[in-house]
Image (cartoon, rainbow, N blue to C red; front, side, top):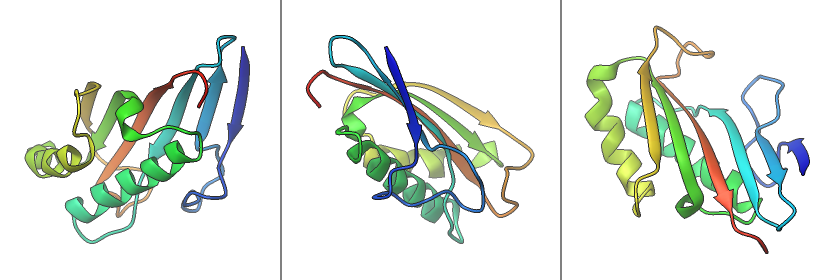
Length: 129
């Protein structure tokens, strides 16, 4: 097993923070698990931020030969759980296949005071990608 940490240059970089955006865990058979750090995005509304987060997630996955179809787990942190339907509508625009396992939490605030949503995911990449 080999573990690689980093932030692909081809994806949007973290906002004012120092961390690796992706941990790639390579298995002997060539498959890999991708663990993405919690992602936030700029935007005035929850829908704009959610779209921005999923666009960043798509770019991070693409840099590792994966797509949103490879997502097996998603954890979402919302500052207002009463807006779950609004978040869910955007999420369904991006996650169109079989739904991954999921957890959603309400939190009083996120790392950036203007952030309304933060999303972290785990993806399973088949061998050869």
